[in-house]
Length: 147
Image (cartoon, rainbow, N blue to C red; front, side):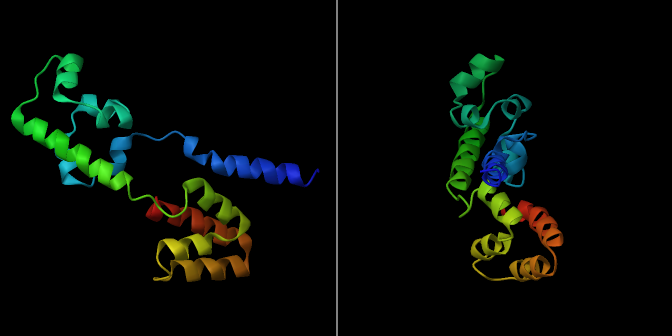
């Protein structure tokens, strides 16, 4: 029982890693020009679900300014791009990836996410074989490539 408790706590930590504070949802989509053109400071401050449900009428109620035709079209295009991007879920959740990294199997997650192409998963496997800690560090630094 004493050995299962730390493992249980590690699993809980790994599954709740997504609860960590993020700077903004807009940072995830700032590389898409459609999203960048449509965002106003008020939109960046609201949550992702609120942004996806935003209409020109709600924007006018929120700010008192009316969106023009061009800004309305940009808003709808940005919402469409974000919804499309959200449907492309990775094969592994972030919490599962971290759990696999701690257990020494991040190379499996890297391989599956890259369709077993590239050298990241091979390097990670070698680092885990040589010593656990360098493999863990490599897995956690490469995590931003996948999420």
